[in-house]
Image (cartoon, rainbow, N blue to C red):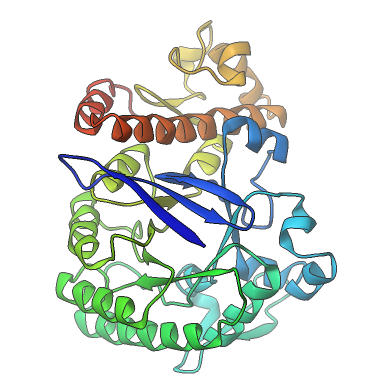
Length: 370
């Protein structure tokens, strides 16, 4: 992997860059749609090309359980298996330590999971196993195995977990052998800023191809999230990509870029689409709501996506209430087009040294809420 820092915005920490991996180039700041099981729900790869996806995220834990990384290897690797010839990032499965907390047990050696798929069959994943699975899948960017703790957590628990994550990161680096595959380290430490500083310093000292801030968007307030990003960013090398994991809203993307982030991922645009919540330049439109019953306008008058060009709010509301499957695709196309066009506009603003102006205009137009 090669990361080129092309420009630093004059009045903020916003950066313009390019990541080059074996499956292509990624222009940063970038948002990666989430394809948990090897597909972004409701969309084809052609849809993803259309909305402008340069990279997708796939989930190690879910692919490990089904169909299995060894099967994917026999099928030629993840890129071939899912017919996607652009970059892929895989998470390590560490988030499932958090989200499946009733089905797991953590020890120094690793994590024992009870599968949510096959009646509770137990699986044991170590840092070495997580690396082995990701190397077998063949993603361009892979992540260290970490523990993402719940919010709130005590200082002592957070410190113990952070130290475990650091030890696991060292084991991941030692286990990682595959050439041409970038390994990113993850900073943890909850919302205790002294622990975040320690974690950032320790993870950077281990040395990785890029660095991520994990453990965000787990129930904390926005000020807590942004304070944590502000705390960690100065510790991360300028010549490496910076990834904020699992974040978030359009506002989070703008604020993250403002603070120096390069990569984002989140299920929000796709999950919201399937729930009828559509992102627009003015805020969120809940297409289920009665005021849209006879609304002939598009989801967003400022959007040029296929859905907005062809279908009215009234029609999309009808399809959603009628439980027509096609509306899930129409909604997802719109939400991802909105997110990826937002990132495109952010990159252009940084290139032209007008990101602060862009940020002010972004907030000025937002009037609709759920």
